[in-house]
Length: 407
Ligand code: LLP
Image 1 (cartoon, rainbow, N blue to C red):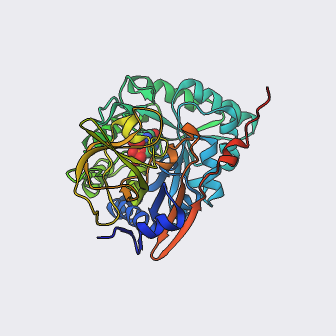
Image 2 (image 1 turned 45 degrees about the horizontal axis):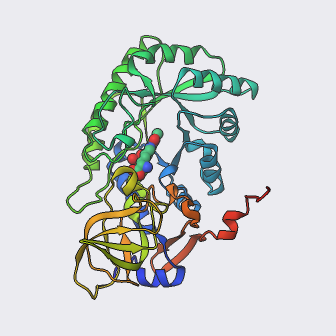
Protein backbone atom coordinates (compact mmCIF):
# COMPACT_ATOMS: atom_id res chain seq x y z
CA UNK A 1 0.00 0.00 0.00
CA UNK A 2 1.33 3.41 -1.02
CA UNK A 3 -0.79 6.48 -0.40
CA UNK A 4 -0.81 9.20 -3.03
CA UNK A 5 -2.08 12.64 -3.79
CA UNK A 6 -3.57 12.31 -7.28
CA UNK A 7 -0.78 10.51 -9.21
CA UNK A 8 2.18 11.27 -6.92
CA UNK A 9 3.00 9.21 -3.85
CA UNK A 10 3.37 11.04 -0.57
CA UNK A 11 6.74 9.32 -0.22
CA UNK A 12 7.99 10.93 -3.43
CA UNK A 13 6.61 14.32 -2.36
CA UNK A 14 8.32 14.10 1.04
CA UNK A 15 11.61 13.13 -0.60
CA UNK A 16 11.43 16.01 -3.06
CA UNK A 17 10.19 18.77 -0.75
CA UNK A 18 11.08 17.58 2.76
CA UNK A 19 8.88 17.39 5.85
CA UNK A 20 6.77 18.69 7.47
CA UNK A 21 4.91 19.40 4.24
CA UNK A 22 1.38 20.51 3.42
CA UNK A 23 0.11 18.87 0.23
CA UNK A 24 -3.04 20.03 -1.58
CA UNK A 25 -4.89 18.32 -4.41
CA UNK A 26 -6.12 20.63 -7.13
CA UNK A 27 -8.75 18.21 -8.36
CA UNK A 28 -10.12 17.83 -4.82
CA UNK A 29 -10.45 21.64 -4.65
CA UNK A 30 -12.20 21.70 -8.02
CA UNK A 31 -14.55 18.90 -6.99
CA UNK A 32 -15.47 20.59 -3.71
CA UNK A 33 -16.26 23.83 -5.51
CA UNK A 34 -18.32 21.98 -8.13
CA UNK A 35 -20.31 20.27 -5.35
CA UNK A 36 -21.45 23.69 -4.07
CA UNK A 37 -22.22 24.94 -7.58
CA UNK A 38 -24.26 21.84 -8.37
CA UNK A 39 -26.15 21.70 -5.07
CA UNK A 40 -27.07 25.39 -5.18
CA UNK A 41 -27.42 25.68 -8.99
CA UNK A 42 -31.09 26.72 -8.82
CA UNK A 43 -30.16 29.72 -6.63
CA UNK A 44 -27.11 30.82 -8.64
CA UNK A 45 -25.27 31.92 -5.48
CA UNK A 46 -22.10 33.95 -5.22
CA UNK A 47 -19.73 31.55 -3.48
CA UNK A 48 -17.18 33.57 -1.53
CA UNK A 49 -14.37 31.23 -0.43
CA UNK A 50 -13.33 32.09 3.15
CA UNK A 51 -9.66 33.02 2.74
CA UNK A 52 -8.87 32.35 6.41
CA UNK A 53 -9.22 28.62 5.81
CA UNK A 54 -6.19 28.61 3.51
CA UNK A 55 -4.88 31.82 1.97
CA UNK A 56 -2.09 30.39 -0.16
CA UNK A 57 -1.88 32.49 -3.33
CA UNK A 58 -2.09 29.47 -5.64
CA UNK A 59 -5.12 28.16 -3.77
CA UNK A 60 -6.78 31.57 -4.09
CA UNK A 61 -5.88 31.75 -7.78
CA UNK A 62 -7.47 28.36 -8.33
CA UNK A 63 -10.69 29.52 -6.66
CA UNK A 64 -10.63 32.76 -8.69
CA UNK A 65 -10.30 30.71 -11.90
CA UNK A 66 -13.26 28.60 -10.83
CA UNK A 67 -15.29 31.81 -10.59
CA UNK A 68 -15.29 32.08 -6.83
CA UNK A 69 -15.59 35.28 -4.87
CA UNK A 70 -13.86 35.69 -1.50
CA UNK A 71 -14.71 36.29 2.13
CA UNK A 72 -11.93 38.23 3.86
CA UNK A 73 -11.36 39.41 7.42
CA UNK A 74 -8.35 41.70 7.10
CA UNK A 75 -6.50 44.03 4.77
CA UNK A 76 -3.85 41.34 4.55
CA UNK A 77 -6.38 38.86 3.17
CA UNK A 78 -7.57 41.46 0.65
CA UNK A 79 -3.97 41.91 -0.51
CA UNK A 80 -3.76 38.13 -0.97
CA UNK A 81 -6.97 38.04 -3.02
CA UNK A 82 -5.77 40.86 -5.27
CA UNK A 83 -2.27 39.36 -5.63
CA UNK A 84 -3.86 36.06 -6.66
CA UNK A 85 -5.96 37.75 -9.36
CA UNK A 86 -9.25 37.62 -7.39
CA UNK A 87 -12.05 40.05 -8.09
CA UNK A 88 -12.58 42.73 -5.41
CA UNK A 89 -16.09 43.16 -6.77
CA UNK A 90 -16.85 39.60 -5.63
CA UNK A 91 -15.19 40.05 -2.24
CA UNK A 92 -17.02 40.38 1.08
CA UNK A 93 -15.25 42.01 4.03
CA UNK A 94 -16.23 40.35 7.33
CA UNK A 95 -14.84 40.72 10.86
CA UNK A 96 -15.57 42.58 14.10
CA UNK A 97 -12.61 44.95 14.21
CA UNK A 98 -11.96 46.53 10.82
CA UNK A 99 -9.49 49.42 11.13
CA UNK A 100 -9.84 52.74 9.30
CA UNK A 101 -6.88 51.83 7.10
CA UNK A 102 -8.44 48.47 6.19
CA UNK A 103 -11.79 50.10 5.38
CA UNK A 104 -10.06 52.68 3.19
CA UNK A 105 -8.11 49.96 1.37
CA UNK A 106 -11.25 47.87 0.80
CA UNK A 107 -13.30 50.86 -0.41
CA UNK A 108 -10.59 51.90 -2.82
CA UNK A 109 -10.25 48.34 -4.11
CA UNK A 110 -14.03 48.23 -4.60
CA UNK A 111 -15.16 45.31 -2.46
CA UNK A 112 -18.69 44.05 -2.98
CA UNK A 113 -19.84 44.56 0.58
CA UNK A 114 -18.81 45.20 4.19
CA UNK A 115 -20.42 42.77 6.62
CA UNK A 116 -20.87 45.14 9.54
CA UNK A 117 -20.94 43.87 13.10
CA UNK A 118 -21.70 46.92 15.27
CA UNK A 119 -23.02 50.50 15.35
CA UNK A 120 -19.56 52.03 15.90
CA UNK A 121 -18.35 50.13 12.83
CA UNK A 122 -21.22 51.59 10.76
CA UNK A 123 -20.21 55.10 11.83
CA UNK A 124 -16.57 54.39 11.04
CA UNK A 125 -17.27 53.04 7.55
CA UNK A 126 -19.56 56.03 6.85
CA UNK A 127 -16.82 58.43 7.95
CA UNK A 128 -14.11 56.82 5.82
CA UNK A 129 -16.43 56.59 2.80
CA UNK A 130 -17.32 60.28 3.20
CA UNK A 131 -13.67 61.24 3.34
CA UNK A 132 -13.01 59.28 0.14
CA UNK A 133 -16.16 60.64 -1.49
CA UNK A 134 -17.55 57.14 -1.95
CA UNK A 135 -20.60 55.15 -0.97
CA UNK A 136 -19.90 51.97 0.98
CA UNK A 137 -22.13 48.92 0.35
CA UNK A 138 -23.04 47.39 3.70
CA UNK A 139 -24.77 44.34 5.08
CA UNK A 140 -25.50 43.89 8.78
CA UNK A 141 -24.29 40.69 10.36
CA UNK A 142 -27.13 39.49 12.49
CA UNK A 143 -26.52 37.25 15.47
CA UNK A 144 -29.56 34.96 15.24
CA UNK A 145 -28.96 33.30 18.62
CA UNK A 146 -28.90 29.80 17.16
CA UNK A 147 -26.79 27.03 18.68
CA UNK A 148 -24.50 25.66 15.97
CA UNK A 149 -23.76 22.58 18.16
CA UNK A 150 -20.07 22.72 17.41
CA UNK A 151 -16.96 23.36 19.50
CA UNK A 152 -17.49 26.48 21.68
CA UNK A 153 -14.42 28.21 20.19
CA UNK A 154 -15.86 27.99 16.67
CA UNK A 155 -19.48 28.71 17.57
CA UNK A 156 -20.30 32.31 16.73
CA UNK A 157 -24.08 32.74 16.52
CA UNK A 158 -25.06 32.73 20.17
CA UNK A 159 -25.99 35.84 22.17
CA UNK A 160 -22.94 35.26 24.34
CA UNK A 161 -20.53 35.52 21.36
CA UNK A 162 -18.79 38.73 20.30
CA UNK A 163 -20.16 38.47 16.77
CA UNK A 164 -22.96 40.27 14.99
CA UNK A 165 -25.87 42.49 15.98
CA UNK A 166 -28.61 41.00 18.15
CA UNK A 167 -31.89 40.39 16.29
CA UNK A 168 -33.80 42.78 18.55
CA UNK A 169 -31.29 45.57 17.89
CA UNK A 170 -31.27 45.01 14.13
CA UNK A 171 -34.19 47.29 13.09
CA UNK A 172 -32.58 50.28 14.81
CA UNK A 173 -29.16 49.43 13.35
CA UNK A 174 -30.65 49.17 9.85
CA UNK A 175 -32.44 52.50 10.35
CA UNK A 176 -29.14 54.07 11.34
CA UNK A 177 -27.36 52.52 8.33
CA UNK A 178 -30.07 53.82 5.98
CA UNK A 179 -29.76 57.30 7.46
CA UNK A 180 -26.00 57.58 7.09
CA UNK A 181 -25.19 59.46 3.87
CA UNK A 182 -22.18 57.49 2.70
CA UNK A 183 -23.62 54.00 3.14
CA UNK A 184 -25.89 51.94 0.94
CA UNK A 185 -27.64 49.00 2.57
CA UNK A 186 -27.28 46.03 0.23
CA UNK A 187 -27.58 42.94 2.38
CA UNK A 188 -28.18 40.93 5.49
CA UNK A 189 -25.83 38.22 6.74
CA UNK A 190 -24.97 35.80 9.50
CA UNK A 191 -22.37 33.19 10.34
CA UNK A 192 -23.27 30.94 13.24
CA UNK A 193 -20.19 28.76 13.46
CA UNK A 194 -17.88 26.32 11.79
CA UNK A 195 -17.67 22.53 11.39
CA UNK A 196 -21.44 21.99 11.55
CA UNK A 197 -22.28 18.36 10.90
CA UNK A 198 -26.00 19.11 10.82
CA UNK A 199 -27.36 21.84 8.57
CA UNK A 200 -30.55 22.36 10.61
CA UNK A 201 -29.07 25.26 12.66
CA UNK A 202 -27.98 26.94 9.39
CA UNK A 203 -31.51 26.71 8.01
CA UNK A 204 -32.93 27.95 11.30
CA UNK A 205 -30.60 30.97 11.18
CA UNK A 206 -31.76 31.70 7.62
CA UNK A 207 -35.39 31.54 8.78
CA UNK A 208 -34.70 34.03 11.55
CA UNK A 209 -32.99 36.40 9.10
CA UNK A 210 -35.97 36.24 6.75
CA UNK A 211 -38.38 37.19 9.53
CA UNK A 212 -36.19 40.23 10.01
CA UNK A 213 -36.18 40.95 6.25
CA UNK A 214 -39.99 41.02 6.36
CA UNK A 215 -39.97 43.40 9.31
CA UNK A 216 -37.42 45.66 7.60
CA UNK A 217 -39.73 46.06 4.60
CA UNK A 218 -42.06 48.03 6.86
CA UNK A 219 -39.15 50.44 7.43
CA UNK A 220 -38.68 50.72 3.67
CA UNK A 221 -35.41 48.77 3.85
CA UNK A 222 -35.06 46.02 1.26
CA UNK A 223 -31.77 44.05 1.22
CA UNK A 224 -30.68 42.77 -2.19
CA UNK A 225 -28.78 39.77 -0.90
CA UNK A 226 -28.73 37.35 1.99
CA UNK A 227 -25.37 35.91 3.04
CA UNK A 228 -25.58 32.74 5.13
CA UNK A 229 -21.89 32.58 6.04
CA UNK A 230 -19.84 29.38 5.97
CA UNK A 231 -20.18 26.51 8.28
CA UNK A 232 -20.83 23.20 6.52
CA UNK A 233 -18.60 20.70 8.27
CA UNK A 234 -16.43 17.95 6.83
CA UNK A 235 -15.85 14.38 7.99
CA UNK A 236 -12.59 14.15 9.93
CA UNK A 237 -13.36 10.71 11.37
CA UNK A 238 -14.41 7.61 9.48
CA UNK A 239 -17.75 7.57 11.34
CA UNK A 240 -18.61 11.20 10.56
CA UNK A 241 -20.68 12.29 7.59
CA UNK A 242 -20.91 15.76 6.15
CA UNK A 243 -24.33 17.37 5.97
CA UNK A 244 -26.15 16.67 2.70
CA UNK A 245 -25.36 19.81 0.71
CA UNK A 246 -28.23 19.27 -1.73
CA UNK A 247 -30.73 18.90 1.11
CA UNK A 248 -29.39 22.08 2.73
CA UNK A 249 -29.61 23.88 -0.64
CA UNK A 250 -33.17 22.64 -1.14
CA UNK A 251 -34.17 23.93 2.32
CA UNK A 252 -32.70 27.34 1.50
CA UNK A 253 -34.33 27.36 -1.96
CA UNK A 254 -37.70 26.74 -0.31
CA UNK A 255 -37.14 29.64 2.11
CA UNK A 256 -36.03 32.02 -0.65
CA UNK A 257 -38.71 31.05 -3.18
CA UNK A 258 -40.49 34.13 -4.53
CA UNK A 259 -38.16 36.53 -2.75
CA UNK A 260 -36.05 39.00 -4.72
CA UNK A 261 -32.96 38.12 -2.70
CA UNK A 262 -29.73 36.84 -4.18
CA UNK A 263 -27.71 34.34 -2.16
CA UNK A 264 -24.12 34.58 -0.94
CA UNK A 265 -22.27 31.75 0.82
CA UNK A 266 -18.87 31.92 2.55
CA UNK A 267 -17.60 28.34 2.80
CA UNK A 268 -14.00 27.73 3.77
CA UNK A 269 -13.33 24.36 5.37
CA UNK A 270 -15.70 22.42 3.11
CA UNK A 271 -13.91 23.70 -0.01
CA UNK A 272 -10.35 22.85 1.05
CA UNK A 273 -10.22 20.91 4.33
CA UNK A 274 -10.16 17.43 2.87
CA UNK A 275 -8.17 18.55 -0.19
CA UNK A 276 -5.04 18.74 1.94
CA UNK A 277 -2.81 16.65 4.18
CA UNK A 278 0.19 17.32 6.36
CA UNK A 279 3.12 14.97 5.83
CA UNK A 280 5.37 14.35 8.79
CA UNK A 281 8.26 12.01 9.48
CA UNK A 282 8.74 9.94 12.63
CA UNK A 283 11.86 10.99 14.51
CA UNK A 284 11.67 8.59 17.46
CA UNK A 285 9.38 6.12 19.11
CA UNK A 286 9.63 6.57 22.86
CA UNK A 287 8.30 4.36 25.65
CA UNK A 288 7.74 6.10 28.96
CA UNK A 289 6.48 3.72 31.59
CA UNK A 290 3.31 2.29 30.09
CA UNK A 291 2.85 5.14 27.57
CA UNK A 292 4.11 5.24 24.02
CA UNK A 293 4.96 8.38 22.11
CA UNK A 294 5.50 8.66 18.38
CA UNK A 295 7.59 11.80 18.08
CA UNK A 296 7.22 13.38 14.65
CA UNK A 297 8.72 16.43 12.95
CA UNK A 298 5.40 18.32 12.70
CA UNK A 299 4.09 20.04 15.79
CA UNK A 300 1.33 22.22 17.21
CA UNK A 301 2.82 25.19 15.35
CA UNK A 302 2.05 23.37 12.07
CA UNK A 303 -1.37 22.08 13.13
CA UNK A 304 -2.99 23.88 16.05
CA UNK A 305 -6.38 22.21 15.77
CA UNK A 306 -5.85 19.13 17.97
CA UNK A 307 -4.66 21.09 20.98
CA UNK A 308 -6.86 24.16 20.45
CA UNK A 309 -10.17 22.44 19.74
CA UNK A 310 -9.48 18.82 20.78
CA UNK A 311 -9.89 18.21 17.04
CA UNK A 312 -9.45 14.77 15.54
CA UNK A 313 -7.26 14.31 12.45
CA UNK A 314 -6.95 10.85 10.97
CA UNK A 315 -3.27 9.80 10.82
CA UNK A 316 -1.87 6.81 8.93
CA UNK A 317 1.43 5.60 7.48
CA UNK A 318 2.15 6.63 3.89
CA UNK A 319 3.47 3.11 3.08
CA UNK A 320 2.67 -0.35 4.39
CA UNK A 321 4.21 -0.34 7.88
CA UNK A 322 6.75 -2.93 8.88
CA UNK A 323 5.68 -3.00 12.54
CA UNK A 324 2.42 -3.94 14.23
CA UNK A 325 0.09 -1.18 15.44
CA UNK A 326 0.36 -0.02 19.03
CA UNK A 327 -1.37 2.71 21.02
CA UNK A 328 0.49 6.00 21.27
CA UNK A 329 0.27 9.74 21.47
CA UNK A 330 1.57 11.29 18.27
CA UNK A 331 3.48 14.36 19.38
CA UNK A 332 5.79 17.05 18.03
CA UNK A 333 9.11 18.41 19.28
CA UNK A 334 7.61 21.59 20.81
CA UNK A 335 8.14 22.03 24.53
CA UNK A 336 4.50 21.92 25.60
CA UNK A 337 2.38 19.06 26.90
CA UNK A 338 -0.30 20.43 24.57
CA UNK A 339 1.91 19.70 21.59
CA UNK A 340 0.17 16.69 20.13
CA UNK A 341 -1.38 15.77 16.81
CA UNK A 342 -3.26 12.81 18.27
CA UNK A 343 -3.72 11.14 21.64
CA UNK A 344 -4.32 7.49 22.43
CA UNK A 345 -4.21 6.49 18.77
CA UNK A 346 -3.54 3.09 17.28
CA UNK A 347 -0.62 3.58 14.91
CA UNK A 348 1.95 1.36 13.21
CA UNK A 349 5.11 3.40 12.87
CA UNK A 350 8.81 3.36 13.53
CA UNK A 351 11.56 5.98 13.25
CA UNK A 352 11.97 7.21 9.68
CA UNK A 353 8.40 6.36 8.59
CA UNK A 354 6.28 8.94 6.85
CA UNK A 355 2.85 9.70 8.31
CA UNK A 356 -0.10 11.34 6.57
CA UNK A 357 -2.21 13.68 8.70
CA UNK A 358 -5.54 14.06 6.93
CA UNK A 359 -7.95 16.99 6.86
CA UNK A 360 -5.09 19.52 6.88
CA UNK A 361 -6.18 21.65 3.93
CA UNK A 362 -8.12 24.11 6.09
CA UNK A 363 -7.02 25.96 9.22
CA UNK A 364 -3.63 24.23 9.25
CA UNK A 365 -1.05 26.27 7.28
CA UNK A 366 -3.20 29.38 7.76
CA UNK A 367 -2.96 29.02 11.56
CA UNK A 368 0.70 28.02 11.65
CA UNK A 369 3.21 29.92 13.76
CA UNK A 370 6.93 30.11 14.38
CA UNK A 371 6.67 28.96 18.00
CA UNK A 372 9.93 27.39 19.21
CA UNK A 373 11.59 29.20 16.27
CA UNK A 374 10.33 26.58 13.89
CA UNK A 375 10.26 27.69 10.26
CA UNK A 376 6.82 27.28 8.77
CA UNK A 377 6.51 24.24 6.49
CA UNK A 378 6.46 24.27 2.70
CA UNK A 379 3.21 23.93 0.75
CA UNK A 380 2.79 21.94 -2.46
CA UNK A 381 -0.12 21.88 -4.91
CA UNK A 382 -0.54 18.68 -6.89
CA UNK A 383 -2.37 18.37 -10.17
CA UNK A 384 -2.24 14.93 -11.79
CA UNK A 385 1.45 14.00 -11.98
CA UNK A 386 2.67 17.53 -11.42
CA UNK A 387 3.64 18.98 -8.04
CA UNK A 388 4.27 22.70 -7.65
CA UNK A 389 5.94 24.27 -4.65
CA UNK A 390 3.44 27.03 -3.79
CA UNK A 391 5.12 28.20 -0.61
CA UNK A 392 8.77 27.72 0.12
CA UNK A 393 9.80 26.36 3.49
CA UNK A 394 10.75 29.27 5.72
CA UNK A 395 14.37 29.60 6.71
CA UNK A 396 15.74 30.48 10.12
CA UNK A 397 17.64 33.37 8.51
CA UNK A 398 14.34 34.67 7.10
CA UNK A 399 12.70 34.39 10.50
CA UNK A 400 15.47 36.41 12.16
CA UNK A 401 15.62 39.04 9.42
CA UNK A 402 12.97 41.36 10.91
CA UNK A 403 14.60 41.34 14.36
CA UNK A 404 17.49 43.21 15.85
CA UNK A 405 19.72 42.39 18.77
CA UNK A 406 20.05 46.05 19.75
CA UNK A 407 20.96 46.03 23.42
N1 LLP B 1 -17.47 33.42 7.22
C1 LLP B 1 -17.11 33.93 8.42
C2 LLP B 1 -17.58 35.26 8.80
C3 LLP B 1 -16.33 33.17 9.30
O1 LLP B 1 -15.99 33.68 10.48
C4 LLP B 1 -15.89 31.88 8.91
C5 LLP B 1 -15.05 31.08 9.80
C6 LLP B 1 -16.27 31.41 7.64
C7 LLP B 1 -17.06 32.19 6.83
C8 LLP B 1 -15.82 30.07 7.12
O2 LLP B 1 -16.35 29.04 7.88
P1 LLP B 1 -16.16 27.53 7.39
O3 LLP B 1 -16.93 27.34 6.10
O4 LLP B 1 -14.73 27.30 7.18
O5 LLP B 1 -16.71 26.72 8.49
N2 LLP B 1 -9.93 27.68 13.13
C9 LLP B 1 -11.16 26.95 13.32
C10 LLP B 1 -12.28 27.47 12.43
C11 LLP B 1 -12.57 28.92 12.65
C12 LLP B 1 -13.65 29.42 11.75
C13 LLP B 1 -13.77 30.90 11.88
N3 LLP B 1 -14.70 31.46 10.97
C14 LLP B 1 -10.89 25.45 13.09
O6 LLP B 1 -9.76 25.09 12.78
O7 LLP B 1 -11.80 24.63 13.23
